[in-house]
Image (cartoon, rainbow, N blue to C red; front, side, top):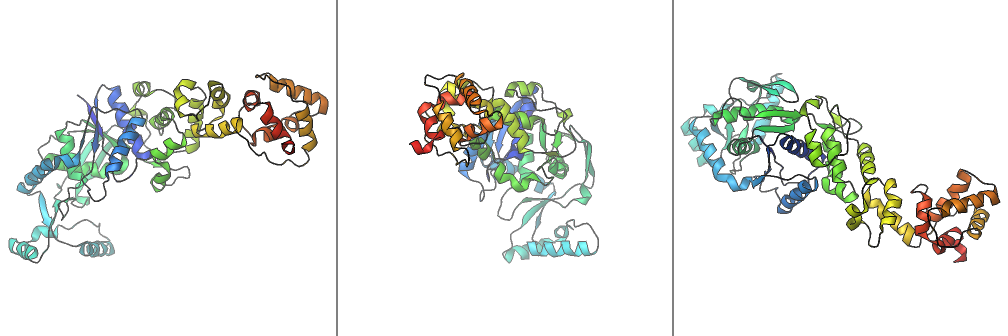
Length: 444
């Protein structure tokens, strides 16, 4: 059985970059009839927060993703301890006592000598007596994994043939001095023991992949236990790393502003691929998802493109699907009047206020006589969608105005906005009494 996973850390809110990977893993699993696992990487107990665990689950559900199994790494500390014992017994996990300051000095010296700043494995030369003295002096070791003297190769489902030369990489720390298990070890143990077959993640993990494949083999795994797809990172519209602006692109913020899940998933599912975004429900999006269409070049996340897709989706949503999210009292007629003009559902509140409450329109110097004439010619109720044309036709005949000089002053007076939904639809919602007060405010 094919199995994929998404493994966020509950140290912050999910953002666009996280979501893209969650979507990719879930879509690929569903397309191929596989299982999808949600793993919470919470071994960093100092930074992990319980409220963020639930926030992550809420965000994943909002995306339309369901999981077949879930667990937290803090529930599996005994399995990591067993793996540590195996690696120690084989001599692949060794203790180190250097401080951060000592390591920094070594790196600076290597750089001055124009050498690669790779850990020198000095601690492997420690005698048992030297280690005993260090521990007697209060030093507590952290533990590094001794990488193989080989080059790790694999065929990546996105990047093609990849390799990592392990001799050019520092032996990774797998266990901190305080006993904290680090990602490189915990992730490998979980992936092996839970039966993960495919891993889709960002291209910034390419070196980690080489390291983790080496750790997996040291734990007894076969030579190629996983299939990998490394997706290029996202850039902002100006070409800078999107990671610098993740706070403004959290899923919670986007959701609260009115971005629809279907538009969001449809945009990210095809971002950076040869396929244009198409609005589809999650299951239909999965049926068309193809990793081979993803470019090896970085993609640019454009909020305007996302808003355009969101606009397209809102324009076709039926009232029943959004009624519970509209202002209290909003009717189907109101929704149909405004939906084709919205980029975000949150904008509906402004138009509800415009159609149901008192507003103070901007002063239009030189238009007072025209607006007074418009008020005098305002038809009696009842009104419908033909009232606007009837009224403006009469105004055109009486004043000689047409085009922008006719319609713009009326829109500003009636809505207070330069642009918006069709006034033929808004006017019956505003009603005659409010329209009169807005056209000739002094009459109130």
